[in-house]
Length: 240
Picture 1 (tube, one colour):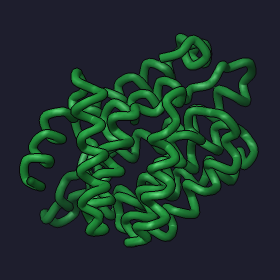
Picture 2 (cartoon, one colour):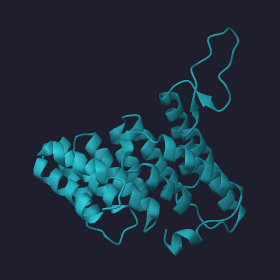
Picture 3 (tube, helix red, strand yellow):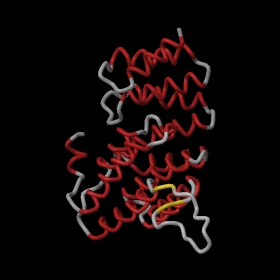
């Protein structure tokens, strides 16, 4: 992580909570967000927490943190015994949890529309919508995060999320263009090997075998110590 991102951290109770959330994310992130998976989300949570100069910043971050906690809450089947209640902090289905997280992130956006916390909430709103299969809504959320995020890490991540949302809607040409642009930014803060894997995945879905093979090969050739190398080699082997 670059010094600028480290500078944004503050040693307080909320940062500690965020670290615990990051640990859970690294263990449980859905495969639908392959690239915005463990390493990227941890970078987002750590890199995206802002230098707190006033009570306003603390309140904004606490509001965002409430949404993050909901996003990773435990799924527990609804009680069947008469009079029994849903255990506190749990949700009966992923859909119910997702809707609760959406409401929490939207509350943050409404309260801090021009604040950097609002950008973070838009990004997480996008990831939640995408996990629920709402690609068009996710596309809009990521576009708004990009527009409001300036040069922040969340803005970069939102560009990746936007490409994933396009792919989820089978807008393959647009998704491939966006991912190709991201894969050419070697000085960016996103993990390039992960971007290339997402590019290869979308190319393969679009039937662009040659382009998919080229992206997988770049992972193997340029990132020998990447956690994606084994998968990239396997994909190349199946493609002949």
